[in-house]
Image (cartoon, rainbow, N blue to C red; front, side, top):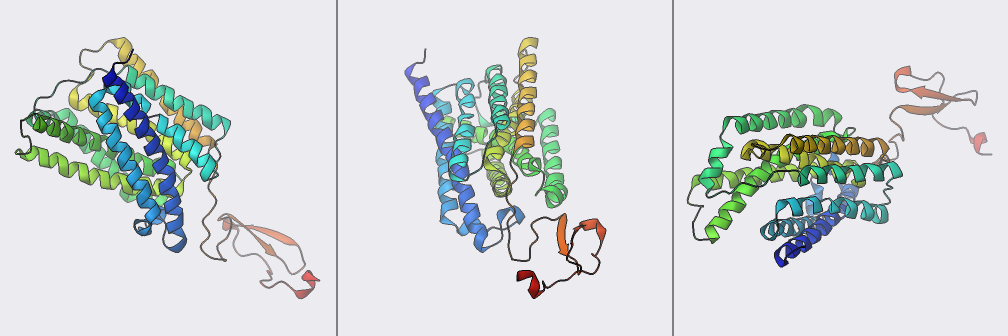
Length: 346
């Protein structure tokens, strides 16, 4: 049975999920509107920064994140974190109603697997350790294991950003979302440090006199900017009903991994808890795979009348009146007529 504090946490978590799930849809509508008059975010454009609707979505997301942050004050993480999956349902329903993005039955199953797997991971996650100062968090952040994890995240992110994103970002949904997720794990660790610093400061022990608190703040701002940029590119390129669950699943998985390394959450845990975590992770991966394989491809964004509807196949009218199909690798078609004769219309 919930006490009054837990009930407040649950209400705030539900409100947070509603706002965050809605923000995906509002921001995508803003991205689409901005893409009509300028370069799309999916190809590196930043015209959406001048679009009021995108800022409405951004504000909605910020309100949701604030509500989520406050929810952790009233209720334990094991109760609040699973409720974040409600944002997936909200975004999927709104995308179906407002963006005409259809979610197939197998896609619904994939969404369900993501929710179930993430819930299993969280329910079997170990309890949070007590932190007394920012200096203590800094000691955890500079331990060799977490430094290795941080270096790996930075290296993978650079490869994804500099090599994979320009080549495969428009066709592989995991590129942009992968960048958001792995950078997001560092965001959560640094934001958690800032949150603890604020709490301790409000309790009377000023933590912002230490340089470590400001280092965590700079890391937070940098990581958040990177996350938002590539999340916008993912939303502008792929189906919202697919982006939301995959982002939630990967972000949750990497965040739990980062927390386990930095805070040594699994020290002294039973084999059954660790096995449950592994099963939950496999379930999440299965769900994201199903969602990706059943998503409906977005309609191509036509910028002018001469853009072909397909990059692979084009059709040409030969001089004898027959239709001849050409693939990209076939070379030039023989004896093509570029202007239709008048008698074809009579």
